Image 1 (spheres, one colour):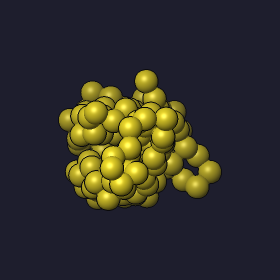
Image 2 (cartoon, one colour):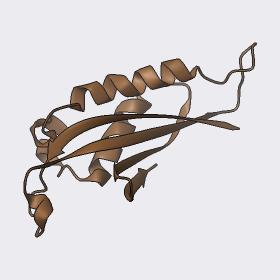
Image 3 (cartoon, one colour):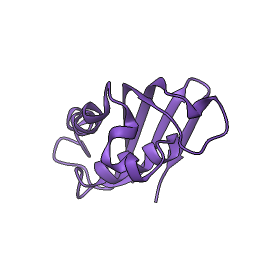
Image 4 (cartoon, helix red, strand yellow):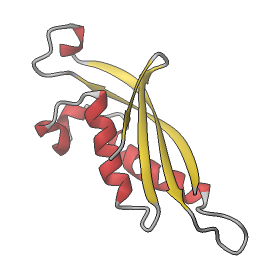
Length: 120
């Protein structure tokens, strides 16, 4: 089994509904995102998946979030835009783009000291 990870980032604002701290106010982050995929087959040149394609797929999701208020996105109108829900959203979107590879996890950092990992 092989695992490949690609990373990217985007900037957005959000506020947490029903939260009793500063994060209930509109604020922003430069989010760091890493996705890890797995497979056990290599192609004729010894590659499981092209890093370029994996990063393009990730960026096709992140560009929709970049420089927006996450609360305005359909998914986050129903789901509070926490780091946890952001990781879950990216996981669900990315998984659809990479078949037959298996998506192992999505990791999201809202700062250099705080991150969340989502997997199924």
